[in-house]
Structure formats: C-alpha cells, structure tokens
Image (cartoon, rainbow, N blue to C red):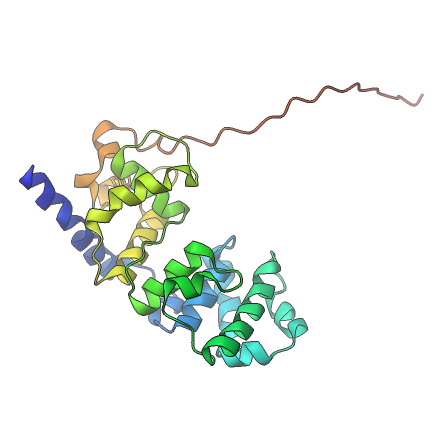
Length: 243
Ligand code: SF4
C-alpha cells in the first residue's frame, strides 16, 4: 500500500519533468501575465491552436492590456475577432474587461471566486487563469484532461462532464499545490499530444506506469463515445413528385 502511495506521489513530478522537456512552445506559454493567459484560453475554446496563433498576436497588438480592451468600441473588438466564430466570447471579453476596470482598477483578480463571477469566465477559465497566472491550487479539467484521468483510473464510462466529481476526487491526492500552473498545463499537453483520443502514444507516456487503462488494454475504448440523444417523433410524411 505504502509502495503504491509512493508510486502515485511521483506522478506529478514525472509529468512536470516531461512537460518541461517536451511541451510545444506556444506564444501564451512564455508568459504568466493573467491578461494574456485569459485571452489565449478564451480563444482556444472551440478553436485549434494553429488557428488561434495569428489572432492572439494581432489581438495583443490592438489591445495590449485590460484597459485598452475596456476602452475599445465593441465594433472594433468584434472586428478583431472576425473569423474565430462564437462571437459571444468576444462580447464577454469586452464586458469582463470593463468589469475588471470598474471593480478591480484594471487589475485581473487572482481569487478564483472573483474570477468566476466575471462575464464569460465559469469554472474552467477561472481555474486556468488562477493556476497558470497566479499558481493557485485549482485543477483545470478540459476534454483532454478528462480523457487522461479516465484512462489513468480505467474508468469505463462515456466522455463528458458527468464524471468530473469522481475525476477530481481521484486527482486530489496528487495535486502539487505549489506547482499547479505547470501541472495543469502538463495534463492538458499530455492529453493533446500523447494521450490522444485515437491511437494514444502510450509507449512515450511519462505516466504509463500509473495507468490502469494501459494495464488492462482499454486505452483505445476509454472514454466510450457519447450516446446520441434521440427523440421519438410521430409524424406523417408525404412526397410530391413532379412529372
Ligand atoms: Fe494515456 Fe496511454 Fe498514458 Fe495511459 S499510458 S495516460 S492511455 S497515453
């Protein structure tokens, strides 16, 4: 039992070492400026990394900080967002920038609760900003992290947020509370680059030793695909044929 505990305690260390050596060098990873972390996290929702890079760079030229974003007219903000889709994200960035200037004198708060109440934030973005920028002890759970955790646990269940509480309980004893920013980023990078949805690269995985799915050979089937929600509709259909 003690041996098992010691083994699991080395999980975060191995993960962080792997991340330091192998992570992709992306512009938003070179900083812990909360504004830049926030902008990149919002852009990366629903959008791929290669698509985000040019937008991120252009955005920072147009709006280098919270104050410049809050002062910009909404039309200018939406124009800078053009092509990224889901325009509500841009509107919320603008609203949140104004709220930060109004309530916090332009300084992004480090408190998870205060972050979560800002327009467009929610638990994911609040945990990302709190941990990446301020090293606060909040785990970030996105689709990539969910998949890694489900496989580590060998949890035979569907993808999606319904298992999040169980995943967080599993994760809790390993959390390196002083290195949460890098730990969260390492989990996300592992899910995106190694523990991929299809064909996970288990032989390159730094935490293979702890992985139940790998031991049981279930890594390709966890998580199960989501069942489609069907609704029964009774209807009469007619076909009109011309000529
Ligand atoms: Fe994912 Fe394979 Fe690593 Fe397990 S061993 S965490 S399935 S990449």
